[in-house]
Image 1 (cartoon, one colour):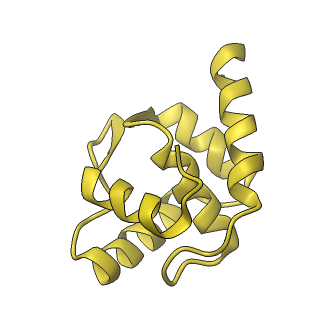
Image 2: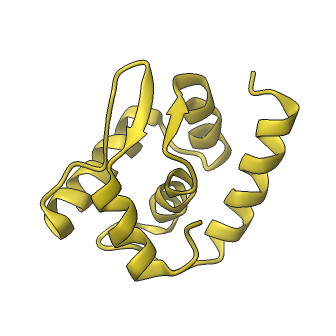
Length: 103
């Protein structure tokens, strides 16, 4: 379970992100997840599972969709890492440039 402080932050980021437009070829829920993930440099597997569950997404499929969209858009994978998901700085910059609500 994510700690209460982290969960509150994550929940509020999801609400803001859910109001934004789609990023690249992603559908709304995947765009929301990407915006949320852009809000921090890295995420634990447990945090990622909770984020995906909150959006009704399966973690592996969501990560695959984000990676494909990022590769198509900026020729870079969206993330790296095994135990911790580490966001690719180039993808974060591109997300910020397109959506202007990642923070």
